[in-house]
Image 1 (cartoon, rainbow, N blue to C red):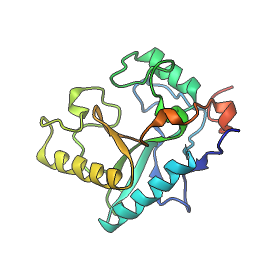
Image 2: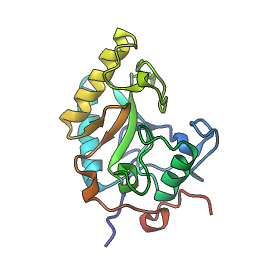
Image 3: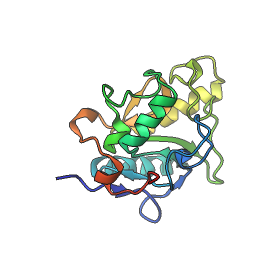
Image 4: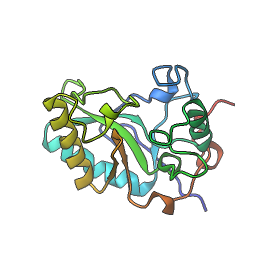
Length: 188
């Protein structure tokens, strides 16, 4: 039986959404999703809620760029940019987004302004690595703050992308297509 994904939106989750793959503001230059949607596996949703509470203690919130990604979208992204350092191979990678156990996000202040992380989301360059020393000191501190909040809440990080967090052991969760998940995010 397929686990029902949890919608990540207000009022249940105090986050801003900027689902980039539903727009042309992404590395492909065109929408991948037919509509913006944000969903997580119940275990991931619980960990995100904890992270939201921890961020709030710092006077911060999250802006989410991507969560669940239907397998069809993963195939489209990998076909566009077949670089397994940044895009998980749909057949051999762990594809945590396709399992509903990954989130791409950043921190925002009370006014909704993104904290400086040194690069934009999906900047496929070594500057995006969590430990890059080639970004400003402020960006390094902000990345460590984000990592501290997320790892305290039970998330694992991906060293090549400061914005990407996933549950530990993602392969234990089922890969979902748009149809299986029932999200209706992909074009017909």
